[in-house]
Image (cartoon, rainbow, N blue to C red; front, side, top):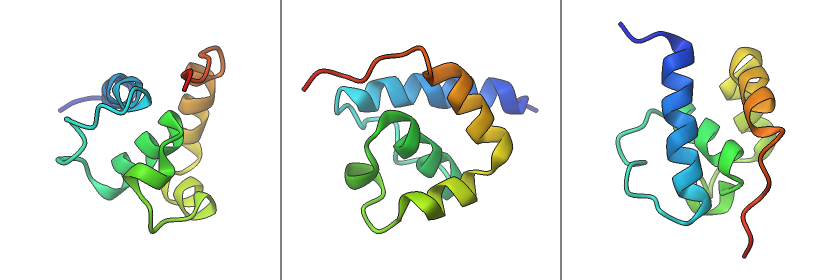
Length: 80
């Protein structure tokens, strides 16, 4: 069994790819994982166009949001 932290680090890797508009590894994710990815990468419109940010934050939950904030706080947004 994969630990939740290991799983989140895996999602963080995919989110960094999504930052660059590389969505090759997103099709096999669960709804919660996809919402985490969309929030972390800033790609809500591209990855989950029918969902609202408030819904995504609620669905992802406090533990995953806490992880996201601690990991992504020091990363800069991609240049576009």
